[in-house]
Length: 488
Length: 101
Image (cartoon, rainbow over all chains, first blue to last red; front, side, top):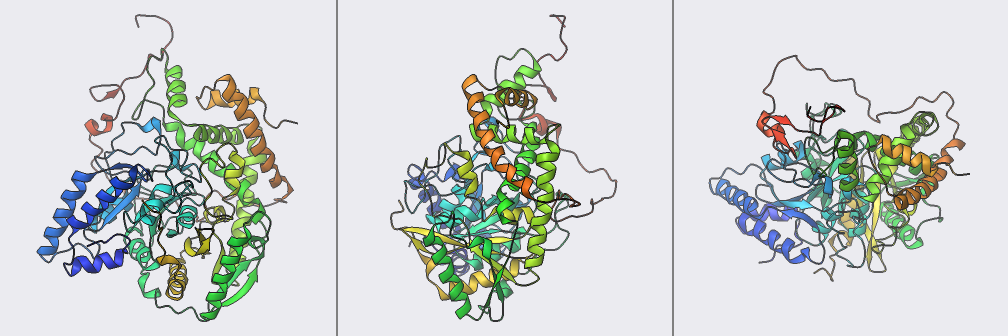
């Protein structure tokens, strides 16, 4: 019996009714991961023996009538920047070669406590820096819808693994769109919660004021279920919001009547966006209107400054966070250096890839004396204005709708030689990270054979309203149920 | 006018403990220059009297009781070290001079 492409909720029911066992599900997921690895390259590493053993334990718990949760025994994947005890974490970087973690990330631990079985670590852009999963030490991940194209990034491996039916859900991280954009490119649901909603303990830091863990799933309901598990205060993360995990599934009743959907006029100008993407998003808005939502034009006047603001702040924080990779305490050390400084330089120069070096250089530059005020402080001030834009907007609407990305999945290599062009493709996603608000990308149509993503943004801690709208849209449209036919 | 010169790139690289080859330094200078030119758009924004935002969701620094809890096992703490001696990390000699130390 094939369980490929089933949702987490469907698998959870089948496990409860003993139609299928956890060992069968995990074995099938591992087999599909293996079979697609040479074409998709969604994974950085699998843990077949431990995953099968954990699945057997989940089955034993079910036989005793003591499942840990409805998700006990479901296979999942985690991005290769979240640590798990006794497992490697590489962040797709040579510099973390050989690292084995002595502890487990809180979000991963909460999934383990619910009985979910991690089958492996998914491929990503090195240290989550990229929008295409091409900047990986082990090579790019490919898009299950079209192998010549990228899955987006930086969580491209997680998005591809869910889109190709390998696992029903995966964790990713989103610093400037790294969950939402690949979800859009791969035709799945990708949810970035409010900053501080999910603990960052055990997530390798890229830009600490922007990083947030979230989920990839095939439905809004699955996203709600997983977010309920991984959210909530964690004393190990001092930026974790001191609130319990929210109840999200009660919001999934399909009712959006009277909700006000805001369309930022700055995001619907034709410049720099594929007209087919805009058309699909407008159709989706019309569908929400038919479901009873009210549509209102709003303004986010500082949107045009978001990319510059984001790349100055993110690289500044990255240059500081990545200073820890020095070849002393963990990871790969360059051989043959005669002095400590030479050892640092050779370790870092050999260990980091081009994009990571570019961002460390930019970040170091904008933090250096003489440039700090003009670049870094200026960006932090514009960040304040961007936050203000959203505060005003959410005074007039409940959710904001935009495209997730100005384009559908682009071809491998299309932007690798033009870093600025790669950065500009994040125009719709970076603002949510700068403002700390939650956002989700859901499938809303097809364009030239590739999925189009619709982005919903909500006020801080407004996860429930986003899932309400996403779920209502799914009930009325077929987009989330489409599967890549060409998938290997 | 170049916003960042090749000399500046090499200076910043030294600060970040990165060594770039000639070809990479040239390329980085031109790419960073392009990115910084784009970042100049922020100069158009009037930020007089605007407070900078460091964190979008500001929280007070959380405090906990000053109570000891079990530390990471020293054996685990050095298990990932590229070079170690007992529970210590080994690095190349830091103090210049006397060859024999």
